[in-house]
Image 1 (tube, rainbow, N blue to C red):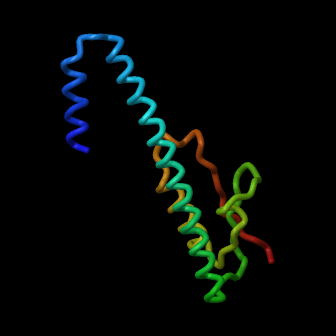
Image 2 (image 1 turned 120 degrees about the horizontal axis):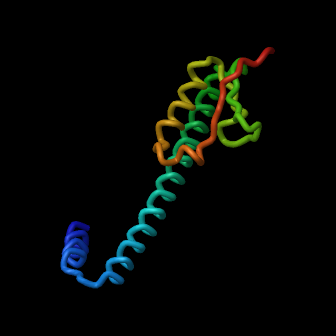
Image 3 (image 1 turned 90 degrees about the vertical axis):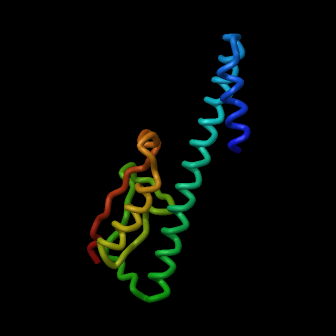
Length: 120
């Protein structure tokens, strides 16, 4: 990896052709976009997996009292929204993990959640 980076660095520094430099810049931009998309996908999948694991663990321990629920601000459902928790803190932990995995660049695409108390 370092060898390839150094090779590209030397190519850019030695290049006198503006069209070649533009081509390299466009390829690097495309790679950056792909890397960002992969990172976002991995973060969402990780948050979803943690949420499922937490819910499964709570269900196995019979601690799920259905007193707090995570909802999406747009009313839609997903792997996080619609889950029930026995305490506010448990629900908050799931959301904290979800938001921690997102970068500030992803703010336009992130979902917004609320924790509501369910009246049983």
